[in-house]
Length: 117
Picture 1 (cartoon, helix red, strand yellow):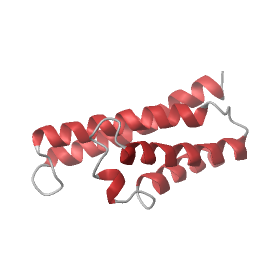
Picture 2: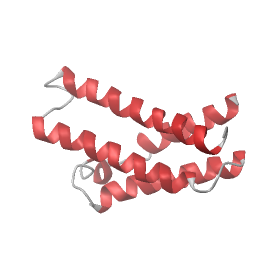
Picture 3: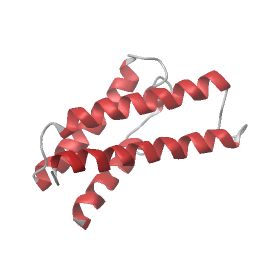
């Protein structure tokens, strides 16, 4: 079980930070923009690898992409609406933390549906 959670958390870190470049993060607040869709697709590929390694259902990657896309879009939309940035408001950091919490909560939800149930 530890290996599965570690793989999901590591996938999330890789896809959300080292594999995300400006084109993705600069456009995630524009609904339907290819940059945000690309970012969600990268998460889907990462989740597909985890699924293949751990025998998880193959509906996880598209579900992960859908959820990830909308969480990120909401975060970026709020940042844009209120002009939040890393240097002008602690609310930027609260929102980033909430974003990460929402992503990890989705993993708990997906695993509860497809792995334990």
